[in-house]
Length: 127
Image (cartoon, rainbow, N blue to C red; front, side, top):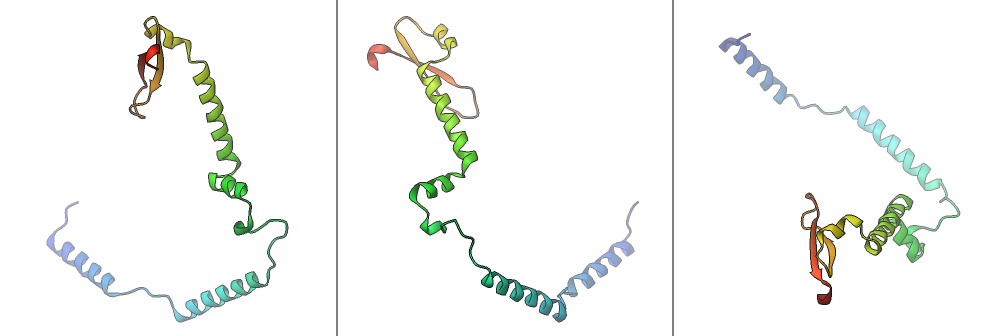
């Protein structure tokens, strides 16, 4: 379907009419929204603080660290990564031994996190 000049002129007139009309909420709607907001603020001011939990500024140092890290999900991920890192560091995979010459030690270097790991080797005497 092709448009002719009359259709384009009519569309332009409709767009201009839409731009000139500013949509604003009615005064009655604004009054109801503000009344609801004031009622909720009053209810929250009357509600006592929950008992048994210290406010964030009174929490201990370790609780603040724990909450800052993200709670239990983040802490379990960090613990798992730590254990795996120690495990791989203490007992490197056996596949690394095939790349080493006699008397060399190996370590993994992550030169590009989006690429594969590169194997670097050094003489044990240099370590």
